[in-house]
Image 1 (cartoon, helix red, strand yellow):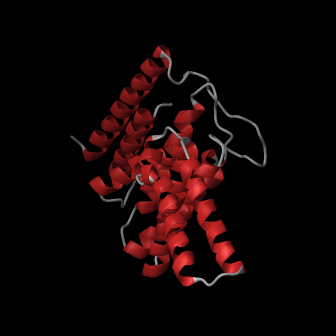
Image 2: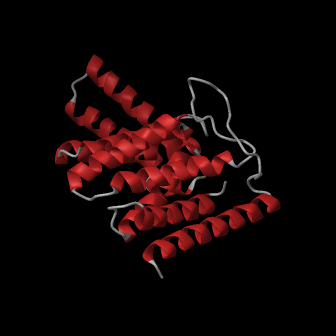
Image 3: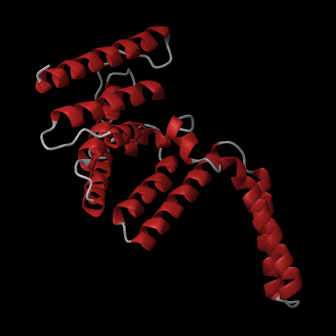
Length: 246
């Protein structure tokens, strides 16, 4: 399913959580979190919306490697005396420079996301927020998994929901786990409606669960996605309005 459809379904799920789950306050930030969470499973895909947004530095990663190589070469030339350490320094500088110059496409995206994730891990360790470090770990690792594999499992959904639970405790923001978990699961359910399906219980089993209604990218598939989003939105709206007693 397309990223725009996942986002729409995630946002609608956020409205459902805010309007229907007892004790959860209606929150624009919570709805936005559900939308963000609905895109998280596709961090394993090079063309996903979230990959492009979180990997904001990907166009600069290759030049960062070149810059590190140049800096290391200068340091080696001016600071290290002739000998094995100097040769090792120049070798490392050359390696960084060649890697940066040769880096293209998906490898750059993966490194950018890993860099973003590791920075988030460090920020979590510095602030004492375990949930932030776990979030960074997810962002750093997800791009190196195959599409619709580990991030599209029940275990990944549980991990993401637990991050929300810890954030709820750390921030005192009630309902984070509901918004985060609801958005994430909405993605898996939506992908279950496609012809490729989802391996919910991998690696326990490679069984693919699917209701093959949608061929992603086809005209009929796009139409069905819009219809599903509209129908889901109307259903949630009706339930919320009914609960409020309008």
